[in-house]
Image (tube, rainbow, N blue to C red; front, top):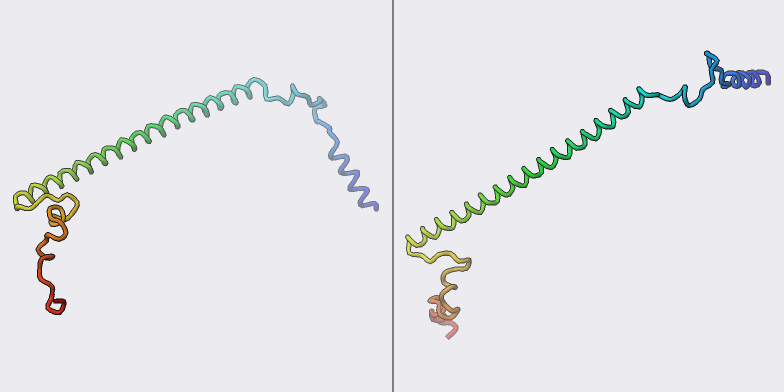
Length: 126
């Protein structure tokens, strides 16, 4: 038990506060003071300015992306209109009907009026 007691007493001696200069530790001697306040204040101001700058740049980039998407959509619509106009001009020059989304034969004729519907049935069906 002598070893355990020796360890306990050594720990108590090492844990006891004993500043080397003999002064007590209080809030005045431990505080960072005016230089610490200025350093923290400058750091806080820099962080706020960085956040404002980052927000401004992010908004600018998003606005440029939206503008680019709008321009690309307009160019695509113009290209489609140009293709449709060229197709219509080509069809008119060839004497065909313009494409309206459904086949030309169905656009004009009723289902029973088509030439393929008027062919006589095969001999087996008569």
